[in-house]
Length: 116
Ligand SMILES: [Zn+2]
Image (cartoon, rainbow, N blue to C red; front, side, top):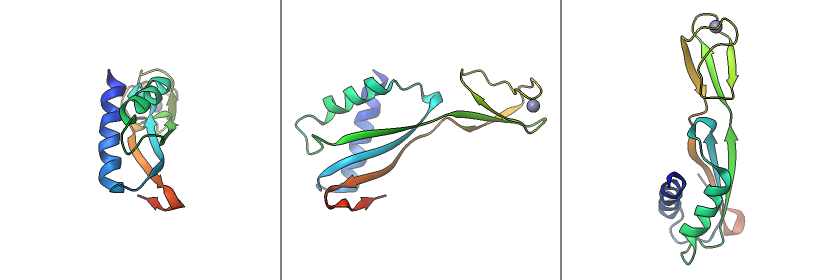
């Protein structure tokens, strides 16, 4: 399962950055094109962290819409399907502006310190 391996990678990164401090929230940015199912991700996070030092921490996901920029006419298009076509001119000479994110934006540990 895609989400399971993502969660396990997130958990590893969080452990590296918090060195045993109690983690309250992990704030993630996930681009639309990553095709992550939010409910599945949260379920997997519970599964992965159960019984570990991250047990009880919360995964908070900020979803980033996918946008493309057209090289021909400069129009920026927000796309709802993974089809990369400019809505200004119909061209396909476009570059991806956002939507491919998968990053830990910040980690909230107990005592409200933030770790970046
Ligand atoms: Zn265009």
